[in-house]
Length: 172
Image (cartoon, rainbow, N blue to C red):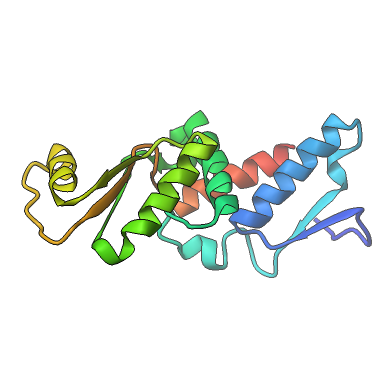
């Protein structure tokens, strides 16, 4: 397919961010009655040739940035629409930390609550051990004074996610 000489909208990069941007931009243009075909996605090699294609695909909301927490929440909602299509395995995510990092977990849990992303914060050695034994019956580690359990998190196969997003962007 020959490259057009111009396009109203050009997205550079065929990784997760570029594909998502192209898809959402095409959707927005369609909603406005404008042609979604005005969006051109360019990559120097192929979809997923960069960092996204080799990522571990961890899907978790363990960030101190409220803006990133919101992006992850929205991403998980998209994965949950069709987990098989995106290669998403909703196995959860658990962060376990010593006292020196407990405040960070509390801040993350507060941000989760503010955006409606469910997570369970356990604080102090006894409640942390009790919560973790509920997940891992053989839990015996010591020194943990805070844990944060995200049940909606998990992992996604990068190649499957890229193929799904590329198909969505093309169809839009």
